[in-house]
Length: 330
Image (tube, rainbow, N blue to C red):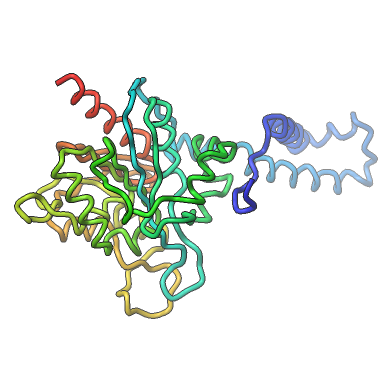
């Protein structure tokens, strides 16, 4: 397994961690219990500190991720069962690995790749993965932290085939998008640096759209539509109902904008989906949450399905496959 891929704790470790957390909680609530296990009074203070530390670590490691799920981060979504044969999907990602003018790493938000990948794969679809430049796809470091990983991210850590596909992604220049039934544009902050600036991506998305292909995108992924055109030469986004990551969510995460010729800053990106999509004539919609990064929203307009953020990957993939199923019945 690649050193860049974070370690996934085994179930036994989770059980041990949960048990230690409960024991630590007990002794924090009932310190007199230390007497029953024979802790001398002069050592009680030290042991109470130890149990507090164990509880805090255990809470953050075992309990807090579940609280985030309940609040909306990667909330469980059950995908309808599909059984497709001889169908192909292409997941397209950014190749950008650094914030402009800095050495701060960025890339694809992991769940925005893993969610559609496993949704398609489990439905019998052959899945290829491509990026703007080809080769190894950079993953947004924060998105691989245990605290923010989705169920699909956990599965990815044991899937050597997907790991290899991410290391050796195809280059979009070498592909004919019309060879695929489904096209999915993953997001992440890296996408703000190249998806909306790629003429080749715009041309290939245009051709796919004009050939009645089903196209999906989440979070920053819809930026890949910016250079796409309809058959009459008008912008693909003109009067198209879409969603994507909101300005509010980016503000909540401390992300701002800057021109490509801008100064050396860390948390600023050249494209913000909400404002860029609106500027291109799209009919942008979204949902609010306690924080927007805990919300989710999916929009379908004809053959195009878009999801608001990292929480929307599974539903977006499902709606794309529902369209594919509809087409098969017609």
